[in-house]
Length: 82
Image (cartoon, rainbow, N blue to C red):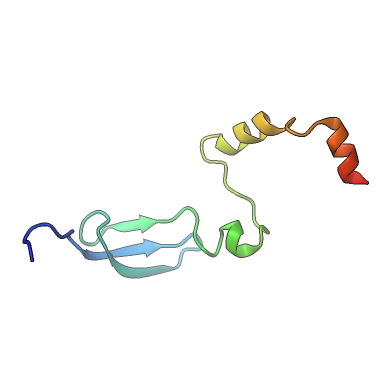
């Protein structure tokens, strides 16, 4: 086995969106660093059924909604309502 090619695994603390914490081993940062999650399985719509709102980071969500707001034609919208 080659030496010095493997990543440095160390213990870090992960903080979930609801404030709960756990420790794990990772290559992230340095020993003892904290990783704060913005989205995790407790808050992501894929796991929650879409019941929570996504956070608008830097206006990305609002730019997307503005860009694609008129994506469907008026006729298609009328047909959908039927």
